[in-house]
Length: 422
Image (cartoon, rainbow, N blue to C red; front, side, top):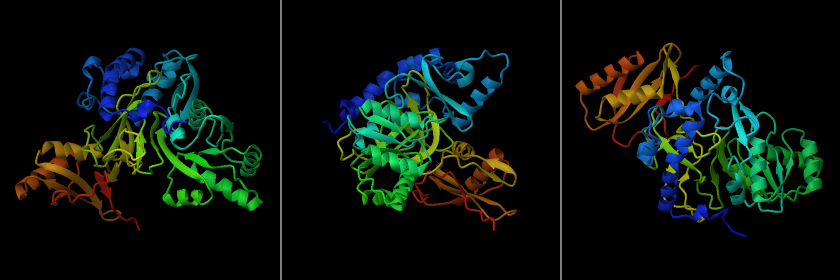
């Protein structure tokens, strides 16, 4: 059996990029034709002109709160006819009947699932984790409201596995079912797998059939990975969302997460849509080629960074470092919200600025803002102009502090709130 899910995983990187860019204009044209909200997002855009990353980077980023607001507005519009356009806010390209299932994420945000095989694209992750045809996968993701259970089930079917829908909770029954059915693989959160195994210990039951796991939905620290390995279970992680499906997955190389094959991922500076250089931490922005639920430049709000080189596992797609925190660093200072986009606006007003970070310190009632600046030029006059720009944009006073080029941490932070509230 092949080490790889298909030949797409081992394409030359240049060929993959040509294939993605060749498919992008048609995908955007279809999305604009069938999803009214995408047509509105990209009003005035010629899809044929979006055939490069540079052109893609000029399109607006769609934020999750905009997706939620659009859906809520559609549902609140009493004059709008009931149906998928109202339910999905115009982002879905398919209607009832074409959509096999509908799921809800917190908000609520509703997502369609079509009959397309491996709709959420997690099969690659399962294959990389060692799942193979003819095996039983024990799925402990939820099957109601959120799509996680279906994500793993449809992926397991694409690999050729039978699935037991364990869902969540009822740990004693989970232990009994695993003992009776002897599945080789587990899918679910890593913490719930640990709970099941600890319950098995408490009951004096050995669950020796489990040999592999694909986990997601929460952090998977090395300590827990090693704890599972000591019990003979090789655990791997996948990163995705209910809006996008799978974004990236871990391989036996254990060096970062390899991107999925059917998406375009950008890492942008938080608060902007501007791609950062490879290696710099920024927000993960994804464009899907999913014809049923297309999303163009969807800002995940998650931080990550591109890793250099190719994975030793033989897969040739770009790798990212995995989840590194949240990009939305909005905070409140003296009763006013301060957003990363405002820091970006200040930087755009002064071409001398290379990088900037707004540090907020002090304690309750005594907030202090300092804009730390890496700059090509310095001086009191320039510092005064930058401080004036901060006040114009945020309506708050800030000091300006010069720092050496390259001295600001590469952690994706644009706003660093270090206040104490004791």
